[in-house]
Length: 554
Image (tube, rainbow, N blue to C red; front, side, top):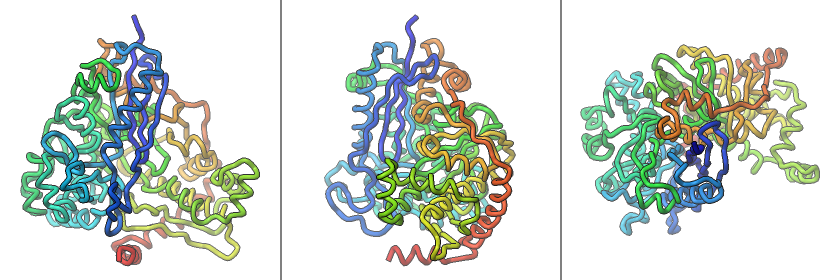
């Protein structure tokens, strides 16, 4: 019997990739990557129109279709396998990344009348322009006594779907009225591929306040929020939902011809990119926590019970793996923060020295920073360079660096920034433990986990846990391929459950980072200082950061 293969697509913040994967063992046969032509639009639209105000993070939807067509064509052409042996396709996407579309499923920004309207474009996950709307939603839920329901997660983030929609309603109501659907970008792509209108339960459960039991937020709540939103669920969202591993539909003949595949193969329901990394990295046990470390970071752990507090959410049961809730949180800036420092605050002499030794600046700073003793530089930082997800869920919060002196060196600051992200991760781990998780091992993935041993060792010491690294740097794409194999089912050469797919298709490296007792003790003391700083800038107690945010917006 011929081997069978699946395609996984991973849509990130700046690029998308496709992988062709062997169903029998998870081996990636070939892959292809394409950057988004328009990247992230935070200053102007494609036509050059300036974006007024701060906190825009928009994208151009045609970039996603270009990635889909080019990367899939490449892996099909270079994979050396017959098209009839490719039995399914799955995709993951950053979330909540949303766009309004017309009755034909075409983005409103493609229409002449909306091409200069920012709210007609894709709002990327890190679009924080809806923070005032998120605050009002939280306030209304608190007034109604509903804020701590699992459906809402304890506080509403500007990254969720509803604040983004409310911003459209309040700032561009004509866009809202013109939209036939308001879609997650992942759902938009599966609808394109299948010609149907199914949505992902994973995306809806974690980002759109949907549960199988209650559906979307109630009509009376939405009406109280804005009269225009009373019929949001029926008019703009829809209730045809597919859970992880289920088929959103089947590949149309048109898209089969475009991609070089066979029509009729299942297209798995879309899943959040970091969530796809959970099976992709090999996490399938309640004792494991998945940690994706890249531009930002995400932590996920399994739980038998739902939980919603301080930015930790559990979403919908079985939205990622069967029979379990998945506790989720993360840091809004990790690699982005290190990149900011390297690009803006490192002297030229360091760059010259790094180049002379054949290193990039990150590697050079890491080599110098690894010689430092934890806490000996007298620095502690807050990791909020792109807002805070846990514990305050507030995009207006910003970074801080405390303890600088005239003698402070760049490598000391670089290490303090790394330590800050480790402390932020520990804060999340503490909340996971409070929620009932018993995490003994951490499985890491992402570009930084692969490239920065210093960071991984600091994380092991700060978290006081062993950390293993996934055997692939394409965990999200591999996870999406796994869901495609489950959508195809065993009879077609795939698997009937995601657990079976994980056991056969996921692998770990032999490398293990283990905590050092002396460093653990020093970091415990520094973590106490970090927690004091976190408490000091609690937005309910301190308005410094929100006032600075207001001044920055003008």
